[in-house]
Image 1 (tube, rainbow, N blue to C red):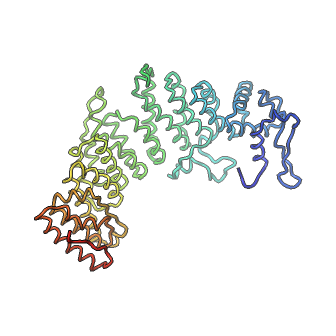
Image 2 (image 1 turned 90 degrees about the vertical axis):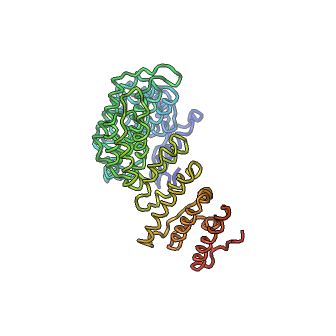
Image 3 (image 1 turned 120 degrees about the horizontal axis):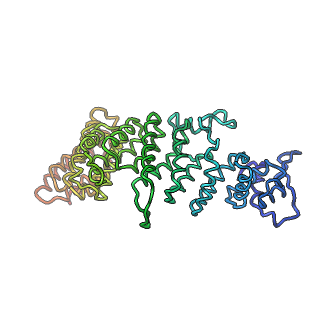
Length: 500
């Protein structure tokens, strides 16, 4: 477990031993260093957990370490001991070891997944006010410098993906209760989430958004998976909806909170025009790449899909969202534009949109200067279009490389490291248009001569073989000329058999 062994490590080891088999052992001491001993096992304390008798313990600190490790190992005896002592004491304040409380929550998560909802609720009810982490986001006494203060990391815009702290794990437990689809339990859970989402501690806000997303995914549900009614009051559904929008308003300046909040709204696509504008504007305004990359799917959805969904709602007019989509394609940040290209490809591949439906949007991508990230995503689109509409695939590819050529003409160094990937399928598309083929190969050669890399350039030059006479001979002549220009610059360039 660790390179340097200390007393807590030995206590952890003791927790893995069944001391019922060794009744002759009452105490064990570990010499951490010369003449310094620590007690690492005490039978009376060990037996107290098995018998659920806290009064029988002789070493409270050792008891807390036992519970910490036994709960981490999912030992039922430890859980039942904690529950018995808490019921007797009237609160769980006696369990002062923070890690023990965190492990208690993790154990309850497993109980929830097994359907033991009452046990999970017991843990939630006793730990929902836990002081870990500090509600105001203050540093803890054992971390005065704030090295592990997740609130400060989020406040500073740093990425923080870890799930930690007692209440951080508790949000995961609440999520596991929500997905059991028992709406009669939701009111209590919503109350806890409402409070968490209003805390100064931004980390707890982000963690509370995870169970909130589970609730928003159920806002319109009327049936369970087995067909039975999903009876959740309309007032609570509206409360969840309002909570999502309140959180959006209160965290507009915290991009890392909005990053998680996106998943809440991803489940709420049945928005009105006004609501959708509010949501998209807030996310786009962050200009954070990690948000723009995600929100691109909603930009496309509200522009091209929303008006056809949720027929029971008032009509949704998509005109403003179509304009927003076009604006983001043309002038959005690279992260947004490349993500939009990927989603268009996915829509074509899954047949959610036809080539005719996306045609006007795809042409907008390359009205602006060349962008390598966008080009990488466009490879997928071009490959798909090569099968669906060869003329469009050729037009878009030519448009893309024209932008790259212009970039090289203005700044040759900018071509260093640029990569043009032209597939065999795309080459065969160009073979249907001899004039376009010659012009495109000429542009590719110019890019190559200025320092760009053209994948399969030999295959591109050999593309004349796909043509029939008389076009074949004239195209071959032009490609041979281009080939000689390449050889003049790079004699070691592979030979081509022009007799074929």
